[in-house]
Length: 305
Image 1: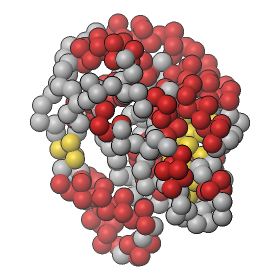
Image 2: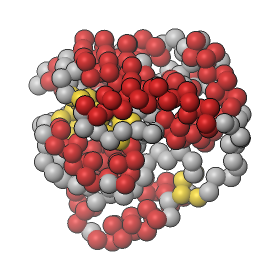
Image 3: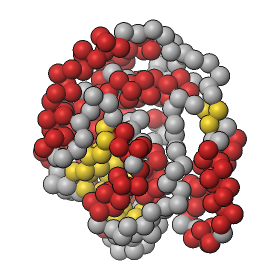
Image 4: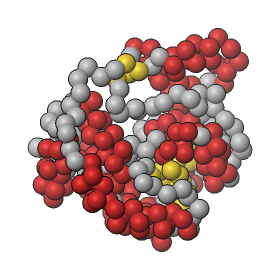
C-alpha cells in the first residue's frame, strides 16, 4: 500500500475547546477508523509553528510537533484496512490560509469536520485551559489585552482567546474550498452526544458503532482530573489506540468506568477569573454571530448565541 493511500481522508480542524478531544477518542475506538496516535500533529500548519518565538510559553511544546512530511507519513504507517484515516489539528481552522493550502497539496479534497461553540463560553474555556496548563496565571482581561501583541508576533494560536470566536471567515473558507464539510454545535454535542456522534459516522460513511465510553469527557478545561480520572482516561486511550476488544467482554470494566465518569474531576485549587464586562465582549461578537449563524442556517446547523 502506498503512502498516498495511507494519508488522512478526513480531518477534525477545530475549533479548540469544542469537544474535539472527546470526539477524537470516540472515533479512535471505531473499527473502521484509524486516527494518528498524536491527536494534533501540527504538520498542516507547520509553516506557522516553525516561527513561534521562544518568548511564547508554548514554544517548547510546539517545536515537538510534526513539522516535516516524512514524519507525518509515518504517523499513519500502522494503518491496515480501516476505511477512514484522520487526525485532529484544531489550529487548522484559525490558521486556515496556511492549512487549506497544505491540505489541498498533501491530502486533496477530503472530508472536513468542524466543531463550533458559543464564542464567549469558548473564550472562557480557552482561558481556563491556559491557566490549568500553567502557561499564564494572569487575569482573563490581561490575556485579552495582550492578544494582539502575541498574535502579531506569531505566538501559538491557543492565545487567540477572543479572535478564535470570530468564526465566519475561517469556516466560510473551508466550506468554499472543500466538497464535504460537517459542522456540529458544541452544546448539541454535549447534550446529545450519541446523536451527533452517529451523524458524524454517517458523514464518514462508516458503520454505526457507538463506544461504551461515550460519556467519558476528555481534556476538560475548568477542572483538574483527579487520580481516578487520569487512570480512566489512560485506560480508555489505550483501549481505543490498540482496539482492545477483549476489554469489552468484561462487565466489571464498564462498572468501574461508569463510576470513574461520575467522579473524574475535582474542583480547581484556585480561580484566576476576574471581572470582565461580558456585555462588551458580546457586542464585539454581535455582527460576527449574525454572519456565522446565516452560514450555519444554510447548512441546517443550530446557531450560536
